[in-house]
Length: 446
Ligand code: S3P
Image 1: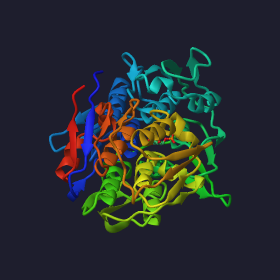
Image 2: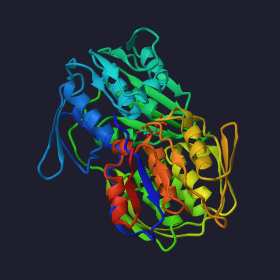
Image 3: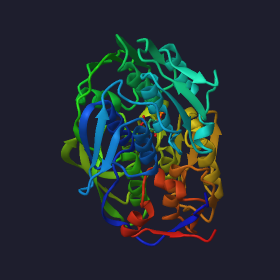
């Protein structure tokens, strides 16, 4: 694919209102659960990004009928549990780890085989964390023992119900096991030492599955799902994505004179680590409650330019803001004093090695940092200013691209990212929407 370099430069305050696109996690799950329900579901506000289109295409190849309606909603004619059919051709998940891993859970719970493929970034990402517990349930990988795409997964009509402690904090692993467990003749029990995003649990309950969640004294959670479930079709409205809202939010906080409102953002305690952290840094954020959507609390966020100061982010907060560290590192660079971002090991296995990409981007733009194992220390430069002027390698990672474009909006010299094409995986028209707020983000010559 040809690279699309973009540049961002300082050009005055950001002002106005912006409806951020639909939440990516909920969009994947709405398509999947609607396809597993017997009958017709409607999804409003579905994220129309490359990752979500890949999941929709995969589900279509497995027999669901997905139609874009003229009013913007998406209609899904679901096949019912056990009703998916062997796919015509390969399932291509592009850049999307969530799509690939969740759909492994779906295929594992059906008597079908499917070949999973993805782009260069996805093909390096670890799949063993999902495939190992799915093997305990009866799924089989071909070639045997393979832990990266491409691979073929053979599901089982009657997956063994398992009791499993997820070894890494991962909502994707948890969700894959729950999706496979839907077809199990018995109870699937999953524990997680640290809570991760709970959208699958909430949405399974909405679609009619018998699921219970117990908060453990240790701080973790136990999730129990009764198998051989029947899912009922639903009409769902997808909330705005807090992980996409993060970029205009930080842009407004670091750009003098800014004052913006982000509409209909999901406020889920398992997702709001960034906003908690920004408030600890002195951010001026007002929450205006709105009507709930998809079982989630919603608010408009009103943010204005703030004098941020350094912060110490504990490792335990990482699951609730795992996708937000690139843009938090940018906020920390504009803060007064040092910030510690702790417990970042999972960043090494995202769309890129995000820890390496963040530190390279900071270095390219004149920001000092120290890496102590999995902990990152960012030396804030509020008084000195951020020199900028760097050309940042994005490594096929949408969030690295957006984070460093945000940096360029308030640095002395423009920041260039080598490729903005991947932004379409999660935030289509990011540049256009940011420009409407007043941001100077432009195409660069290749
Ligand atoms: C997601 C879970 C997270 C997150 C990803 C979306 C999900 O991944 O990074 O963008 O929708 O379940 P892990 O569960 O692997 O941490």
